[in-house]
Image (cartoon, rainbow, N blue to C red; front, top):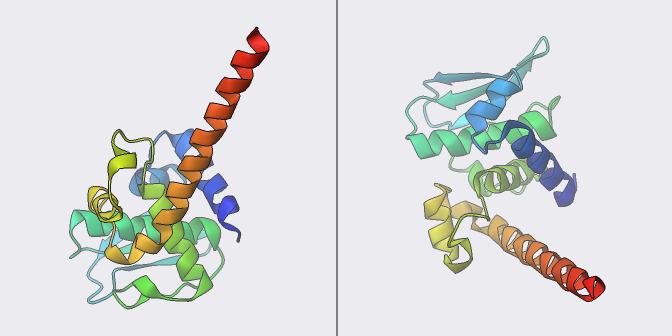
Length: 166
């Protein structure tokens, strides 16, 4: 799936449900979220008889649960019929296409570039502010670039309106 398609799916979800909270979005989409002891595994997505389920390790801290839920929600939305590998410390840097897409989804769902002061934060500050692991830093440049494109388009529209108002 192309990154703009993923962004469109995220934008539609955020607009429709008025939240970036993956637990609330999952509830709205009738996706069952289960917390259970998974040992070293952070979480995984499964589907049984049309019932979509996100499994999250109950021993994770709250930011860890949010990231895991966002990642698994990405699988649920982007790869609904795939058997996806479990998320763990090792797979955070996976080169598998579906894992990178789920990490991209989690990063872009979690980060709100309209937050006051966002433009003045370093990459590390953005990761910390939104509770994302360091391994997700490779998905930040796209958010920064898209925000610059949005700001540039807004400025162009403003210039166009001023010129044509005269």
